[in-house]
Image 1 (cartoon, rainbow, N blue to C red):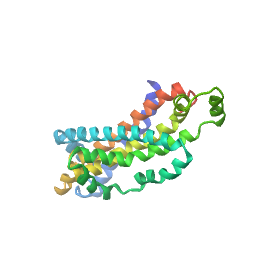
Image 2 (spheres, rainbow, N blue to C red):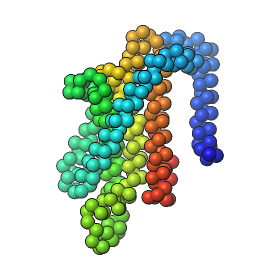
Image 3 (cartoon, one colour):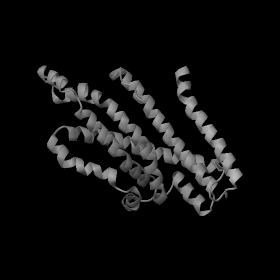
Length: 254
């Protein structure tokens, strides 16, 4: 508990100090609420519109979790397939990079055409932007296995599946969780962009608030989305520490 408090206290104190400073500066400079609302105005909007924001947050969270889960499952499988052969990696890895370089804002309207308006298009957007970090980091981990250990497994007649399950996947876990932490944040971004065109969730709240020139409500929705990304990042971090404590007792996630 003391160790957790030591990790949480510094960023919490920084956030509170920054919020107070922003409140004072915005009031002192007389900045228009249309350009930049005070943190207190954002907090009031978040409370006043909680019946709109909370269901929207739940919708976005569901899409993010499904998209992230799909990126983990398919990303790990893709990395295993790419790691199976150098030829396969050279032939197909450039196509995996497509998920990293594709502008999701431009692709999102196509997702609506392919999947229709609503939840499926949002899930697809979250998947597209979050799958590449999983593939890249899992592949890097699988490729970094100690050659001496591979030779030892072969010496004892271990088959391909045994090497994968008992050596390569456990060895790749630190790299995989690094990718998952990146993917968790990207999945939220992808879902919000998907909601801009596909409808639903916090993305629709942001668009509606912009049309009404309710900058305070825009910031309130952004804070909800940021909080979701932070929670997912923390969850992946905790799961990673638990898993790596078993497989990599010297591994320390920063």
